[in-house]
Length: 399
Image 1 (tube, rainbow, N blue to C red):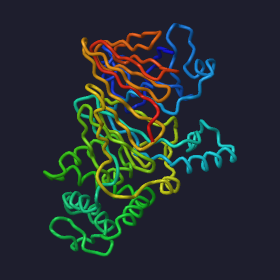
Image 2 (spheres, one colour):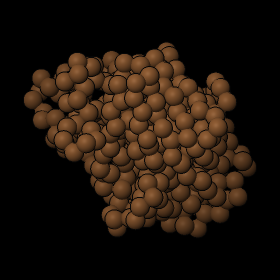
Image 3 (cartoon, rainbow, N blue to C red):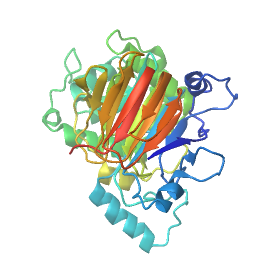
Image 4 (tube, helix red, strand yellow):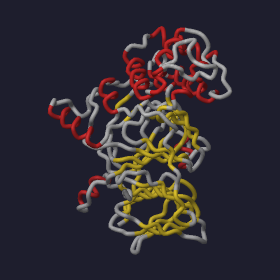
């Protein structure tokens, strides 16, 4: 069963004006185009081709199919998304039930849990570079970044809370105190302080410090923080962003944000795949509701490098991104005119074209796709992709 699907781009303020139109080969509308959703999520289900107006969730229900366990998107960012983390499935179930029992409307601005699912997610870069903040970098690295800010109240306060009172850190910014051995405690305390107690004067001093900061090692990080400060004046989430790994992905590179890991995409075009959920706990760089106690309940305060995903080449022209979740896996397929590719399926799938012109074929049906077009594939154990171009195949994971 093949069902061609499409959707209207969502016009979130952080969206790019031109990245999605360029992918689809059309003129920009002049409005931000942030995301295109491919799936049956009730927040914005895809529309079935043919002019009937039927949505994919309606079509699947009519055919007796189960809802998809994943949601596929094209994401185009021109400025930072909110810093956010997502709950585990156990946390989501308990907290969703709590808000339901309390009678909080599901569309309320301060509603945190809109469903009972977790929301791990992976994003693969399509643009020449895709920038993201993800996870908490090692604290010694952050101490060196803060040391580059120069003298001032923000530097002094941050160094003290990073476990290195001013004058006690080494020349490289490394901590010498007892807190250096307890990074999780340091991070947890610093996050809570940044979002509840850091005052406007301190944030303003941090912005001034970033403007004069000069560091070869952290030049990209400082530029990213300056841009965030300009887009979100006075937002204490800037301190949270300062703690996070900056990742610059090149085409085909990917990162994975599991439950609890802070992340905030900054700029670029990518294909994003996630569990079918809309549960978001925000941690700054946003005008939306931030519930600090709930964020602190779910956030992962472990430090370390960014959680990147290296694809496995399973056949010529076929690379699979398989994070350790059962909800989804993502396969990137490149085909040439003389070399069609067959992809094995473990369940229902969505095939999204991102380059060239391709055909998606099953035993009894075929659909042609151009960049930005997609097709739902159901009740099949394999699908053939032919033509000259590239597609991504979203389907249930192996885990």
